[in-house]
Image (tube, rainbow, N blue to C red; front, side, top):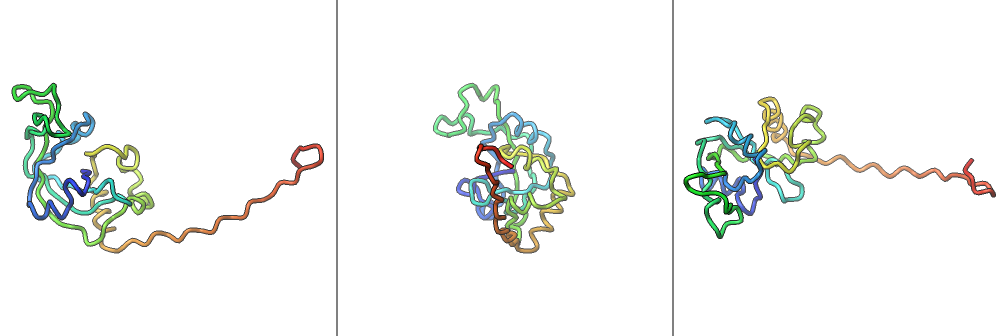
Length: 170
């Protein structure tokens, strides 16, 4: 589940203990969130930071909640079509589990062969995505050691093409 740290960071979730995951306005993300079950593990992913990545763990503590932000005209998540009788958006509540010992940045996730099938790497903007138990375990494993980005290789010298007087390459 993605969050912008200025809205709800892993540290803020730790302070609050539990929080409804409101503001999801993608039907695809809503579909995935509706599949969540009580007790499901959650990777808390910080987006809108450089680099983005996984900061901590949470657990689904309630399902099928109405997202009240859809009714608040002052909220950026307001939906004029939603009514209390016919809400459009729902959410789950998550509870804090842990802050990972080391942030797992997106470049490290991309570099990991075992994580190449993650939805995150195919549909990066989706705020709620499925993660397999093996993918979750691999992220937690990666968080046990700090990541050092690979050293950049020096750029290879470009070969110059010889041009004949007629202007054609040889």
